Length: 205
Figure (cartoon, rainbow, N blue to C red):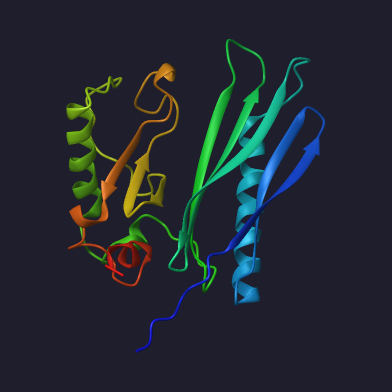
């Protein structure tokens, strides 16, 4: 079978503004399948709207909101990105929310954490053990001893690694920021779904 180069998606920034808010939203183009492109852009917009909603009211006279994004992976028909929304709505400091999305750029499918692994594999325990080891090794201060990730724990894919992360205040004090735990695809390759995004990262091509 001849090698087929998979063109990365084109991701551009679209500015959306409303009173006290300025959002920079990723817009995907250049995909071979128009239906996949539409599905990806619809999911991104839906997630952006949810982040705005989750931040609550901007009624405070000093309130402000800023939205931005980071592209984590854009290769091998895998598009993984993080959407951020910072809002100050009153109080001691603002709050940043993060939501990450990982797509199959050929079909437009958005993947859950469970779908990255083989059906029936105990991915929660495996990932939790790796996260726990990093917490100890990096001496991360947590509110209480770490037990386990959630089955739908937020994640993105970057540099042949699965990056598991937690929201502000979820397991660590605010000052720590978002706790990120990169897990090499090679450390979990025996349970990775070969047809999913991590399976593509595991291939040595």
